Length: 618
Image 1 (cartoon, helix red, strand yellow):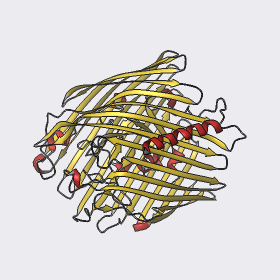
Image 2 (tube, one colour):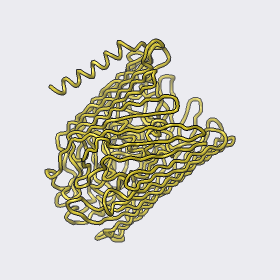
Image 3 (cartoon, one colour):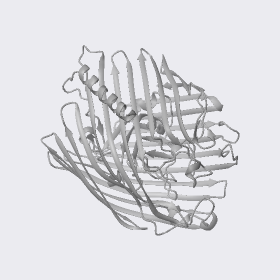
Image 4 (cartoon, one colour):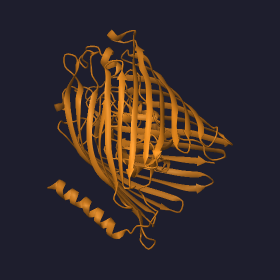
């Protein structure tokens, strides 16, 4: 009955908006351009998959330097595990794990993070380093919810987060300095500079975040440097080269009921080069990347790893209404460790793939999309990944969508070769197959702008229903094997209203119905925010509610019945004021109601806390 009333409420919202907002031709909200869903610039309503975009302005408005925090608030169905005021962490069952639509692996390999379309994961464990992505480097973020392995390969099971880095577009010199200080001796600072002259542009940044943490021996520190150079040979041919280096040091005091001391020291670097072409009927790119790092842990683990690859794709129009993309990928990832039975073990995996993606428009109303990827993995041979979908542009304001897509996750190096028997881990298994997911979804996008006489400026809504089945999940028995299956069903809703008075209202909600209890994947997530702009000031307040949440347990990870079930809500406020001459003052008040809750079992999250900062740009 409660579900029925909730869905009835959603329909009332749609009917209310339709009765109060009148369309204005050529001012549609559906024409937002994204690239992640097709690898070429395309309108979001032409893509049958669920793709969202977050602009740099939205990322910066809260003063939160880590972009993944913004993603989990702006995008429904996304949840990150945390255990302190700053620093997600990286180790198994700890923190920094990204879940989407009920897909979350340990290690964190079920959601793929991309930098400018290039895969970001550690060569041995297969997970990204969640602390490494900072807002000063980001132009925008695009998120695919649901499998995207046809375009991006392994790990794109739950979805894809594509972080698109900044390019200096303004001629001349610009710079920005940020600094904030808050509770638990937490400080965040950054410096970014950019310069452009004729066809050459340079952007660089440096970030440093640190905190003493909530408990003894829970301090955290990360330093991150980024540089990007662009050269335009012509309007159609452009080169981009970038380099990133990050150093992380963190201490973990263990859960409160079983204190311990564990520390990590991680250094990671990433180099990439991209040559893009954009001619009248053909566009594409050649991308080269090299991702490397060292992980030094206090339990004796020490490893070096790397992830290298080449991505090549071209998109052409066979007819005005028929577009075809052809691509090929090459990846080699792995590393060497000095730990336990895996001492001096040096292993790598090679993945090679070819894919074809096509989109055909019928009378500019119905757009059919299909694609096929054939992937060869040196550990388990071949896998095929099909997708298909339809987008129907019902009118100027409504687009209907439906799709079927497959995703997969290749077994990681440590699952295949490096697991050592212990109370926590079963032996490795070189015969493991990839985990796979088959996803069905349907939904609609609704958006329009108002007449000049209305108090509303614009209104938009997106609704999606999905059903997915995960097969061959890797589980622990006497050794690691492919066994379990899992079914997930859910709905996702996003709604935004802009008023001419300067008030913006937004809401996103996700409901997950899984056939098994899932740790670190809430059944319900609700995020509601109001933002008010007046003259030189911006103020906002938001509420985040998490329901039916089972904590992640670092001690009892093999006994799900010992997870704690929780419901919690946090109320947060932020404001900024421009004092002139390029200066902005920013204030954040988090967990205003001082609610006590845990995301990881035995790690109480911060109560009410404050931070204040300044931003100076010129």
